[in-house]
Length: 202
Image 1 (tube, rainbow, N blue to C red):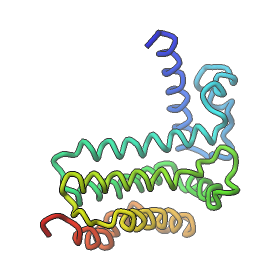
Image 2 (cartoon, one colour):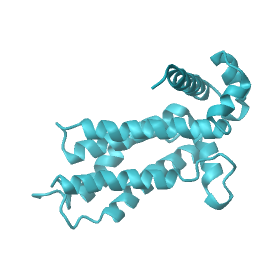
Image 3 (cartoon, rainbow, N blue to C red):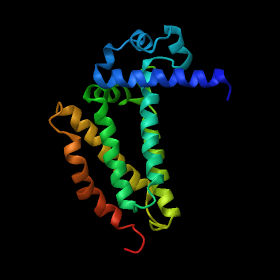
Image 4 (cartoon, rainbow, N blue to C red):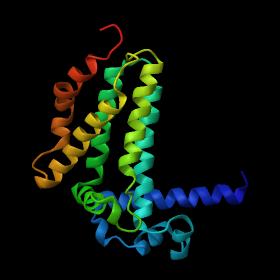
């Protein structure tokens, strides 16, 4: 990698880091590209070298976080399937909450109908999460942790429905329903009995 390429990657990462900080501290709707570039110490035009708009930047931050969860799962060699899935379940909701209820509402509002999602909004996040979960389950089958006839698609949609359902309940309750207080309990009550049917040797 050339020095120029390294500098470009550093600039992009700095924009991502500063934007993440802004998003976690304030209202996404009122955040301007100029706020990000000013804090980064670069020209406004530099932002558009890397991102189409602030929504595209937010989507990249989000995908990166959830990719990191998947990587952590792959590295958890000393944990069994149930423990890894609980980690995924809890980590997913922790990341959602970390960004705040207003960002969650904005994302749901803008992607609830993929055909009319606003420009720049990640209306493929649903498919991104589905594909990630399918791969986690398929890998568990390949590793002989789950039975060969495990209904991967069914389990994938059950998991995603629970997670997205909690996001929606959080927004609809105006924060009264706190996912961090419920995620582990819901996993144990709802998901463990479902998974145990397909654990190899059970």
